[in-house]
Figure 1 (cartoon, one colour):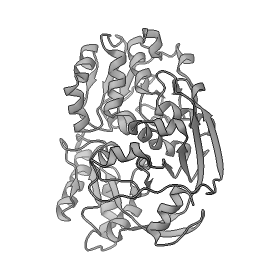
Figure 2 (figure 1 turned 60 degrees about the vertical axis):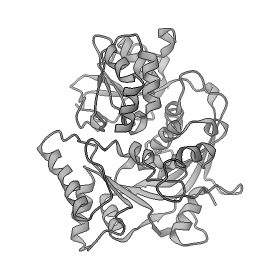
Figure 3 (figure 1 turned 30 degrees about the vertical axis):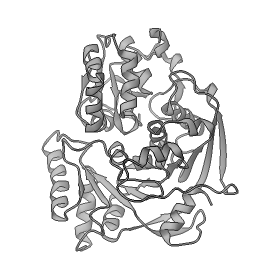
Figure 4 (figure 1 turned 90 degrees about the vertical axis):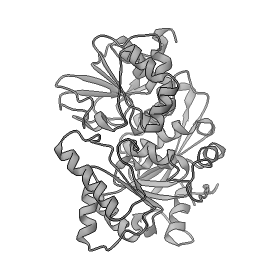
Length: 419
């Protein structure tokens, strides 16, 4: 079996499972945010549930329209707070203690290798980087799981992606996943588990692995997953709040498709409007002028991402025609950026640094685009109207390319700044 099939079998209480099989499985952890949790809470009450299955295994995180941008957002966030109090949930993360959910939960050691995790948010697939089966579900599935601790699944087919070769300068996990989505398309892994492996993956630090698995959904994937190793162990051993288990894929496991990529041939890559799969080398887009740069999100808002951007922009200025917004993904990351002097670098350059929030990524707040405006962001989606007006445009890149572009006022690569 593949790692995905082994995790699902274990949680369904079966010796083995096969792709296409319908199973009921126990959930280790579930989460919802200020957009999706209110629907789940309403459905939870409708089904007459008396209590949650485990108050230690549920996280409610106000991060999308938080800090509350208007009355409607405030009402949504209040529902999370009230429900968490009523059922004495251990993991309600209020403003000031919160972060963007998919950066916060790994950081807190609440999602772990071998887990089966569901979340009412499509980018729940992020946690596959830890060697977990993790996927986004609807709010009604979360409601049922809050009551029962279980959820149904169709076992996905697995697709293997093998990466080899040395990464070029300024090429990161973001570029690998953008390049991959550009190759297979936004439905190239539809309802499949995307298993990333190879010598390049084994050398990738955890933040880059999280970025790759985060965007599995943008290829239509049910999940993204990386077999855990010593890098995984180093990341989770100091954080884990409970026991965890490493699973691996059998050497004779069946994959519906196997793709191989020579990473020495992958350049800094950008997704052009209006699909993540519309990719081009960043160096070929130097005539694309921009109005806004966003560095952050559950995809690229970790401390390593901020370091990367700061290394490019240090001692330089944001172009006068550009606004640059930097959003650390959690409070701990924000504090780390302050202590390392990264916030000072960004502010000296003319950027603004925000409290943790999903904010502009989904067109929420903190950086909405007007008609005709164009943004380059380290976020994960660039659909029509994703960051504001339907006639605005969003390009996606890694943090170094985003920072270089903020300086140049157009899409640029760090090499142009002599880096």
